Image (tube, rainbow, N blue to C red; front, side, top):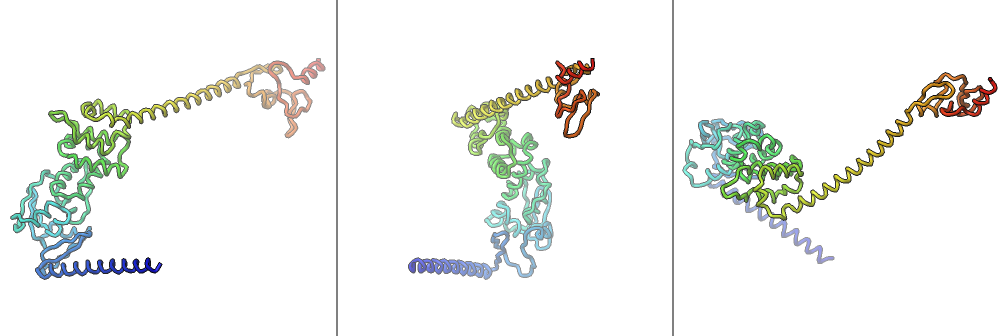
Length: 375
């Protein structure tokens, strides 16, 4: 027991010492960067090393507070022309979320020392909302509208803004029925982004059974010259698109792209066969249950029909429902008689408790006696 406590103390001692050494090393590194005219900013757990300029009162912030610096000449160190639009930009913000700007300004490119930089984006979408995201990390909903989302995907992919691509993929997964039928889906979207759509859509429960299969088939609607589908086959297998697809979805996919499935191995359809057998068994069980319900309802209908048949009362000669014979029929039929609560009814002047009233075939015994006496 003493040895265990000593070893625990040694672990805590060495662990604390290592942490302190790491802190001292980090502080020394920051002091060295400061001594050569550089400053360190931390934004969302990311360390950004920039040139320290004492005469500028500029502080890197995050969220909505960073929007005050978007396209503002104050503290801006670059003028960037996106296609034909000019924006005053800050290097400290551009390198935070964009791999393109991080490589551009931290490399040996001539743009590093240029004040005005021209960048030709692949899509002519609205650039300012993308700059808002680079500065604040907040995406405007207009970037994901059906008329703008493909431009956003192209420009975000070009600039290497992975966080914006993830949000675009999440929105794409919720609107795939509208977006996947667009010709831009096949011409612009690559397999990496389709991977992201399927992954995020599954994670956020945006897909129903068979939706992933339809997305892959629509994405690979055009065949190559050799008829090979390596990326489509990989997407089908890695994301298990065939496991939960309905029979109707499979029929649609086979009619849409028969050669895509002919290139798959037979083992890929084993899960489809098992599910088809299970679905068939469930359908037969449902049919059997419904048949039993139909038989029970038919018997009930026959019984009700028989009870509602009209029969003639031998005394009053009125037609009455068969079911009414067990009730106080004679009161309804205006027969002579009396009824007292908790005692019963008599159709012949005799008080018979719980009398069943007139019978349809023959007169009751006491009714016969009363009739003979009256004659």
